[in-house]
Picture 1 (cartoon, rainbow, N blue to C red):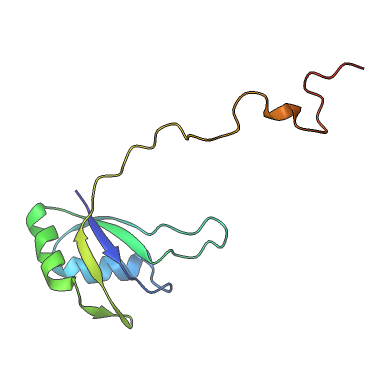
Picture 2 (picture 1 turned 90 degrees about the vertical axis):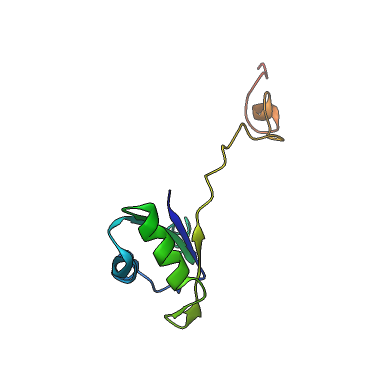
Length: 106
């Protein structure tokens, strides 16, 4: 299981998060998702601790705490939802929509 950390500063680094969470135990992994277009941190992250007891201690200590000028939101991360096939896509003959050859005979 991992911990969700929200309302992070856009200036935060993985090392910053690791340092803060190490006070509560072993940090196994830190993830900071970035925006695809800008490459900037998205303002939230995930921290994996060594044990559930360490996770609980970190959550209790850091949820609502002010850090880097922001009040952190820290809780157990929910399992990632499975992404099924996307509905409403163009499907089938999208290539026949103007300008592109599909099915035309010359």
